[in-house]
Image (cartoon, rainbow, N blue to C red; front, side):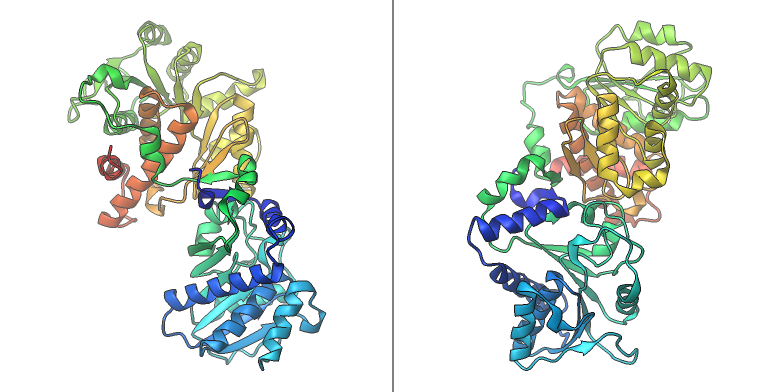
Length: 501
């Protein structure tokens, strides 16, 4: 997690890294641009071998300058390059102007926008807008993006797909749909959440030779991109002299009538993630049946909140919410758990009941993890779902600050955040996870890790990552469409084993 390549930055922070490289380390801006161009050509030839006719559409800034460098280097390598500029290239400034001049000096030509529709290419490269976009794309740039997306060939984005917000992962009206993206200097956080993964395709990173120790000055304000190295870093191999009491006793609270499956999914995932013992506190209507085919789960029939309070006198870590419902029975169990000082993960209707408490004032406590999907997050912040999705990192941090919690905001590029502003994004996972019960499994994973002594933030990060990696393993074997939540649970042992745990 300390490696600079695993850090996530805003567009402003990346500009700061650029400035530092040029003005403090003495690396010329044009040298960085040439390094970027070489990286793009290398990736393009490796990822799209056999392509010999390239189109590069260049914009008015340094992203366009990158495009001219790519064109010059590709032509030297024998590629037939067509370059189109959105502006009169003689109006370019600074390093971009030099890149155009070098392209022109080598005999390169530039076509004006718009291009005819009857041209044919093997590869199209997007050097239009870069990371600075903060408003909806319009005019000729919208037309150029549409043109690139219509082409019957792969698209490669230079630094970031044009039209994608580098901070939020939102589409600014329209966006280039790239097969692959070559990004430089620092990983942009918007490429890994919301619409970012769909727009970027395969992401290739090049630090352009900027020393890692120089980048470390920005680490305190950067986020993290979760990687499998995290799992053995926060969870150690178990000593042989161990017993189940060493690894936590999970109490999963929920499962109203008709929803016993949710609480069982949570409990099974906790067992598959190393919990020493798991007890389900659930509705008497199905308490005798919920563990029929999973006898490792202990079950307590709970009729009232007072019955749960008695049970909570023992030492547990809590999972509150899977299948809980919003009935009077649900509220009584919710209230009993909120009185407890035990570490806790809250999900599903536990979050909805929490949101209902807000008119009476914010509910703040220590040692808890909230795992909302965007609709639940919107209830917690009393806003629209679209506002959550417009900036998922800011939303997760806002919830964390409001409730004194660690938050895992689920979705494409799940965001984990705490009240200090620290955040991480998970690049793993797949659309097969969009199935009933997947969130219950995640709750079980995180609460099991809490029970094994991890901090809320480490448990949330490791739990989100392990859950996503398990889903990817299951999808590799079964495909995405037919994936169900239990398949994710079944794949969890393989995730732990793969990292030596």
